[in-house]
Length: 400
Image (cartoon, rainbow, N blue to C red; front, side, top):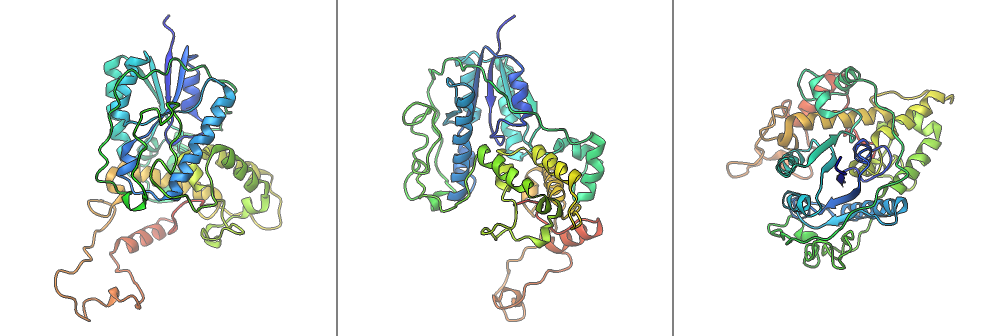
């Protein structure tokens, strides 16, 4: 039987603990195993991202690379600076890959990107394995069990989720990782077009992150803010699985805080002392497993005997995680329309711009000193009343 040669493609799952896709990849008992990240120009140039968020991502990647090296001194996170759509067909051939494994992503760009990659894999005879792990339940399954409709309230999630089954318990991090094979890149790099660059306004210098496919030193290093042309970050909040797990432990060690957390009574702008968990960015980049978070909170609730009554969804910590799945379910169904009021069947678009010269009677709400109000059929009002009528809340559904 031919030996397996596996690429594990890290994306928004920058962790080792509770990673179903990583477990599936390691279960292949590979002869050669490459943990990689592709530096996708779609996010570098076509998605507006602030410097602090870039620093957080870079932190996450560097921490993951160190954790991989701790498992196997011969390995690391191999970061390659090219679009995955053009990189993978060349990698499949150069490294004689038999399997590509990654975590499912229902973001509309990611779906289209992954479809291209899977077609390339099929053409190259590479088997693709995909596992969900970004949400409590598979978002597509959640929609299916919601009558093939986007999840628009926490009650719909509470009804549809259990039809799929209980939230799976987290699986432990691996204690070993196979050696990578050769890392020679005997092909030309396809350098992306840098314009238009939606992040140009943040940059102080020209972006140099694509000058060499394996980085300036040829060691597959994570880019720096300086390479991206950005100034230093200003945030005290740093990324990485190591920090995420410490923060989760710190949160759940305070049983009263964890059990009685109520979103309306917290302020996401309060940092010293912090009012919320500050774990949302870790959930976004996958340095913290949402299932680990869910079950650690459930463990606290099961043994909580405090004087103050434990909170419940939708305002509790569990409620915030359910809201998160709700939004992922809505995005999975609506696709690109999810991020816009235009062409979104769940929003009413109102063209607020004036078609004629402004007058005092037609522009009272544009006055910065006036109090803003919603019309009864505005998107904001529609969302508010929809939430109220279905038992949900006007909430962003994050744990911050």
